[in-house]
Image (cartoon, rainbow, N blue to C red; front, top):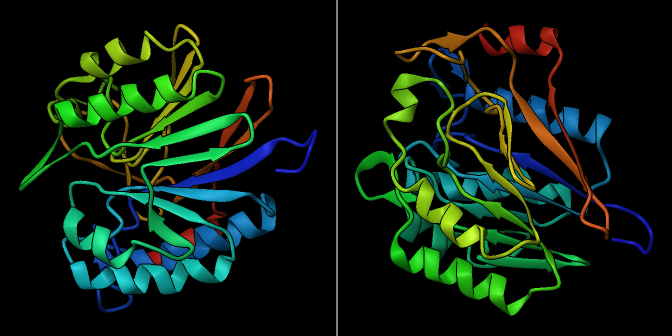
Length: 260
């Protein structure tokens, strides 16, 4: 971030790549979706300081992390990753331990710190923040009291109104018990829900993001695919703690090609 310019970053999520190209999830070509989203980012919101990829990077396929790296490294900016329920955290850690595309637990940039948490439960689609994750979060926030903070994870820590997804969250209240002790937290962001979401809790924005592939219709009792196109979330943060953000989606002609 240059002096007096906002810190700019992009959140993508739920890429669901597999080892072979052009695999489909709910009928959507996951490679074509990610390529179209990245093209949209480059056209509308470039340059950025870095990107964050909030889980379900692959679809239960540890060998696909190499493909993810090959797709994202040419962007030329850091892409900080964390695991989702379709990821293999140990394999992710080994494959993305260094380089531009990597799993980080903390990133400090200017007046801001970014903390990446692991909310996964082995062999479960649900989310839970282990005591060790909550302790790490508290320690990192305590060590940097003068930095504003963005907390990143895969699972949503609050109810979003979709019954089938809301049964997958566990201890969001424990997360907020930690955050309430640290007044400079400004954002909690997540993936998993394959849809846009925005709410506020005191001074903290609570934000979900569309997937780069299939979208889920909001406020449903069971899983229903939405006809909205893939997308991403952009952020601009200033050194006074102000957050500007929005969701951007690819154009419809690209989206139609994903289902061809």
